Length: 168
Image (cartoon, rainbow, N blue to C red; front, top):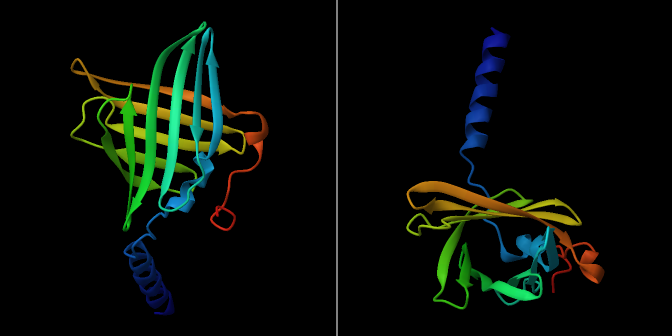
């Protein structure tokens, strides 16, 4: 009888813990994105720069260089709006497109906009203190496509990312 009661209690505890709402991410939790990052693939160099999380925003910019020509640039920001966090992209300086943070596990942030064609998903994943993977996914010409970049911290930015305690 004790075995059955213990098993029932254990099941109730497991069910109760699975229904507990996850603590929503705060902008400071995304501090690992802060800094200068670079990816080099052959003659193509992609650089991405992010300000630290402060006053509800992180500002970002990226550029892709092939040889001595900038072939792509993008302005970005990440904003805290109440309990929600949004990634706002302006590729080539075009009109902004918003992606809502839909998943966060402490090391990976997933932003999605199911209404946008390509990309409709943006992911930043901290691999270690000097390496971050950025990826985009979406539908282009009726085909599901994606690409990713392994980014390395640049120069002095190789210091550890700010934590919620030292982000200010």
